[in-house]
Image (cartoon, rainbow, N blue to C red; front, side, top):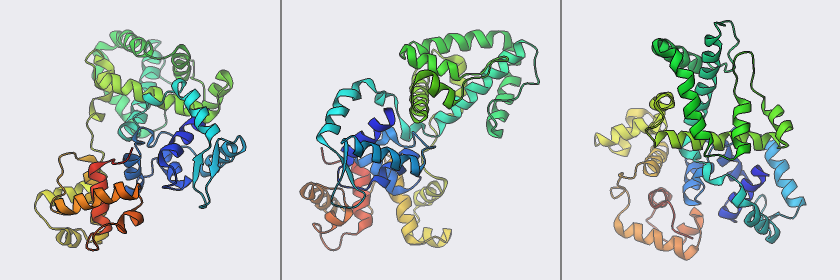
Length: 350
């Protein structure tokens, strides 16, 4: 139900502007400028990367299911799907009961996973340590996570007796902000001394959800927890768990390198030669920078007159399709300039 609702909502926001593949890439968190820019212009940043395990096969099956139930329809253009009237009615009815407002995918799609993995392994470590049992099998088999927990455990060893009670108290506060079912699902996923948390499949069977919805629920809960901890000083231990994850740049490493060179006043051609990359790649980096840095000025790449021309064209075309916009602007304006204005303005249309 939750995955179906998210797909319907994304389809409603995008309309006939993009194919169904764009929604799949959005939910998977595809690291492409096109997907990130789509997330911004269609106001779908919350759902970026919320279901990285979603397979193309499973996504297509959900699309077919929604069409079977007359909630989604294929347009005359191949692979473009829009909600039917019944689909819009279903979304209007069920959306208030779905945790859409928990998600902050663009910000937490990576750090949220790290936070949950750290917390899960930390609780397992502390509960086993309390019972003097040190031969347990780590429930999280990721070396960076294991190294972080080991380092944290050694550092906090003098305070170990106090750690579990404090973590319990902090989690209790966080879980009070969730529904009873959400809190129980989250707790059932945790592992303690000789008590392994339920798998996604076991949780699905217990709570009568699909495995997709269990995965999405855990992501939603994690995002909400992370945001609460980040914006509140009342979580001294969990605050340490996320400390190095806060305010990390969303730029890819390559775009960050380009940004560094731009700040040193290098031109696009110079950066292309220095980095041995095509100019189009540097253009992509600049669009990425404009998406994430609110203080980044695009005036050196697009004049104010051209910016106005582009924004007027978007309004006239009532579309974010580059081809439609291109037909309505001055012939000297490039696709790069249009993408840059869209990136900076984020959204024009209702």
